[in-house]
Image (cartoon, rainbow over all chains, first blue to last red):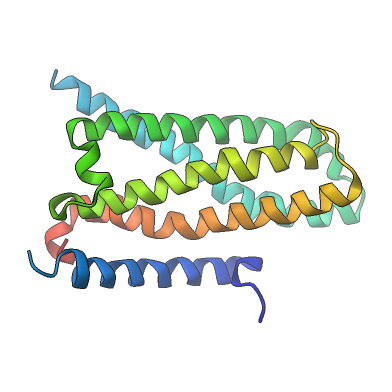
Length: 34
Length: 163
């Protein structure tokens, strides 16, 4: 599989996916009981 | 003392724009330009006159951004880095920014010195340095997206996005 960071588009898509993953993690784990 | 956070925020944004602006310049302009310039034999101008200057402002703006951000967090520095719920958005942004600062000084700058001939390196070492520097730079571009989402949006639109 090609490294997504080898292209600009792959880098941007990876950044957007990471943003969503972190957001879901924060909402469901760190802020779950608040 | 009310002036202190205002000045720290201003410096954080000015230095951050310089840092991330140059990061995007490297990824969107210089790296693709170098490929074409190498092909037609004009890459030396970029390597000699442009890249060292861009790297100078890039790496020092990274330090200035982090220090101004730390000053802005002030007594909440530990709250942010330990991801306390009320500081979680800015805390995630601060962690991502810290990883980016590490990449600049530990991976990008030492390898760029080899690529640009500032320190001696064999052709094999230069080839390896090119790959490491590119991936570290692309990693920082990728991390900049969630970093800006959590730092900027997490602060101004935290109610909207529920942070």
